[in-house]
Length: 81
Image 1 (tube, rainbow, N blue to C red):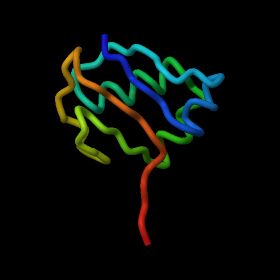
Image 2 (cartoon, helix red, strand yellow):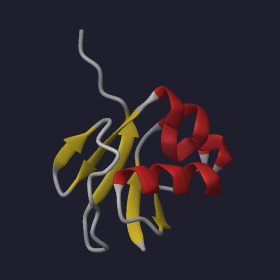
Image 3 (tube, rainbow, N blue to C red):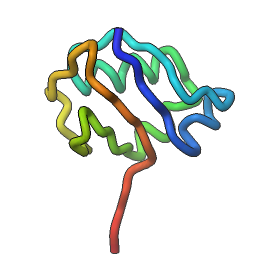
Image 4 (tube, rainbow, N blue to C red):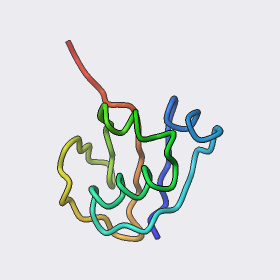
């Protein structure tokens, strides 16, 4: 199981839970697992999110491996302009 921290509106979408556990070996599995377990997250996940894994930020790297002891943080996609 991977421990995931959720920030801001993502935590609000699931009743202000800031940490959840999901069975996942890749970033894609993590996002799909979250969408299945927490359907209220799906609209935000579909719009795009940023995921920090062990301090590195990923946006669309679905095959990025995640270890059980990885630090994983999920937040609304960071966009510049």
